[in-house]
Amino acid sequence: MAQPIEELLNRIRWNEEYLSYKYEVSYIPDGMKKIVLIDFAEMEFGEKDTEGFKLKSSGRFGDWIPFDSVIDVYKNGLLLWHKEGVPETYYSQEGIE
Image (cartoon, rainbow, N blue to C red):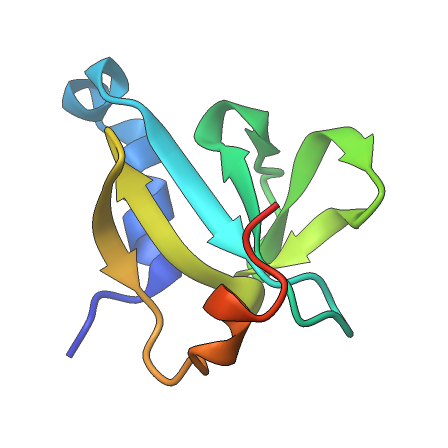
């Protein structure tokens, strides 16, 4: 069973060893069938945000992302974590933005 995304993101956030790597996170914005890729540095976690995170620069897809919208985490360009059950059409239909 895969590690819950909240645990993985917290490990990246708080473990100093992880800071030397480049992390990217992909998510599916609410109501859309496309994948958005962001740099981990663009993510902002509040003390009481237990269900998601904010984007430092508000974009056209909103500024608050629930954890259940996250589908992939990449470490130095390699897939580190993947959410099970994401239809392949999300990867091929409109592409990654």
